[in-house]
Length: 394
Ligand code: PLP
Image 1 (cartoon, protein in one colour):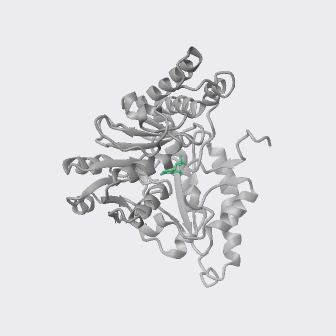
Image 2 (image 1 turned 90 degrees about the vertical axis):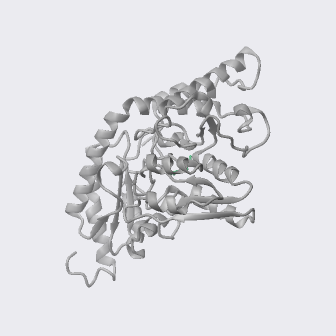
Image 3 (image 1 turned 135 degrees about the horizontal axis):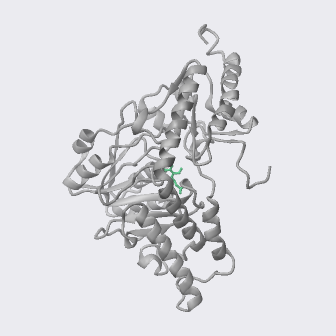
């Protein structure tokens, strides 16, 4: 198989997606002949500038924002780090949730340790991963400087009641940030109707290239710079722009948005079919996260009793099937997922969890392929598991 072909059975679209061919086509000239630095003042450079500005329009349109509200970054991680560390530069209280991505949680933990007077409240979630609006309201203090709650969870697909949470922040005059990395391009994300102040995006989650993200900063909101140097991005984010990456992001988001509604319905069909088939053919398998409208369309996450998620992943890999046992960054770690722990999933069950995430190239045939191997793999591992030995039902 050539390196450009998709793996046989790719169920890890929440970790990253295949680059859309149209995005690659849009990028190619800027990786080759049109290599001008967009900061230059001559015509050759101005062409690169024009293309970057067009991409900014494309990104803005996808989230009903204005182009001037979009700042390109090197990743979603960078955008999250920027908001959290700069909004709380002078100390103060931050509210976030226990199920956030590590690109939020670890920044909060680092800020708490830096001794700049930052205190963080990590809101609990219910068994499906939802933050309670009442808990948020109760956690706000006079010194709260920022609330950061993700739009949708990368592990279990829970879509937060973001409109309600953002409205609470607004009523209390507290800035509201949302990590919308898993939401943009997959479900409706509208900054006109939802009063978020900052919103994080990442190109490689919707068919764009890796290593480029963006931060939406509502007009009128100020945020100190994270990076100092050149005057790029109107002095908000120094560093020569990743021109080709930005153009790829623009092309990808436009396509993702154009296809979003049809793709949502198609993926919900695939998702619910996979959930049903696992529940029917694998005993002692528990779905993590909610069902229906409150779950990301391509996300399926199961705990399989008595076995280790990592072992399942290795055996799936041997069958050409790619999945994940948590967030991409922690899938190499032996710690159980902090998201599942926050839901109250017992330690042993959290260890036996697998995320199957589907995307634009996923098909029913992929599900057939997965279901040919998954029940056998689970059985094979349980046959070797001392924990499963006493359980006659499996
Ligand atoms: N936030 C969420 C919810 C994610 O799922 C990810 C990636 O897995 C990130 C942030 C980090 O984005 P990036 O890979 O662009 O740094």
